[in-house]
Image (cartoon, rainbow, N blue to C red; front, side, top):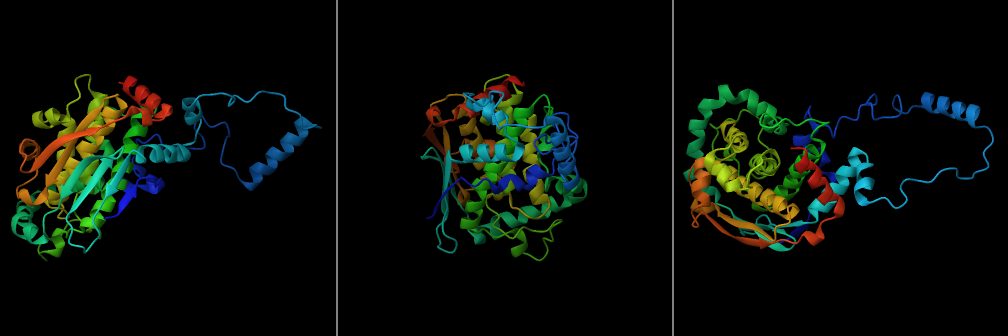
Length: 364
């Protein structure tokens, strides 16, 4: 069973992040007020700058005439000075290093994969068989198909942007909530790095592979269905933002039980993938368990907690639909989702990440 260390920083092209018009991390407009140059570099501009330098400096003997501010500055100051791309790479390496994935080899017949945090087991997923899906899950898609006309605009938008739906609950401003945005997008990239090895290893069939009458609204992705990436990312983001948006005890399971707005949006995003015809409800259940558990552990680690809940979703033990109510019931049923705890150590966190978290919390 291969183990994947999450050091890959190339997920900055994640479609969940790159198409969001509210994303301050992407708005590298050359006319932005923080940009000291009036426009992008070009041959003409470089030539003009060279002439201007020669015309104003004259002779220079090569001696220094000022002290670099980089001398002795702390890691937070150095990180803030980074451009968007390098900062994302730094965040992805540091956050990804906290997690690892163990996924089965496709075709091996193994049906269990897991995610660990700091080497401690955090999430286990045991997949259902394709025969189970055909018998127990495929019929759900018939009822969901009736919602397609109403949900089409959401479905299309959510193929490339889920963050905007959470911004309906708490405004996400490039100026006022810069670090909330940065951490939110880092969480989406982390989820992609976690879910893709599992999807590949489980290689669970999509609905279209089981009936010609599914006829999805959107093109079915070629990779495995289980767990749902949209559900993983939506529930992880809802969990992270629950901690940041609300001044109350951090308890994602209680927020799910009471149907808090952030999780209602996560539920709808996940359900829309079944409406579209590209996912089964169990895909969303697996993704919700993965997303909530990973984000909850990340938040608790940043908050200085010594442990976080661990969970095991047994896919073959659940044949029902996916809603917040069924998720709540499953979280309380050890036969479907069993729980434990994973140890955490804040000593592994870089100082700049701890400071970024503090800044994000203070934005609210």
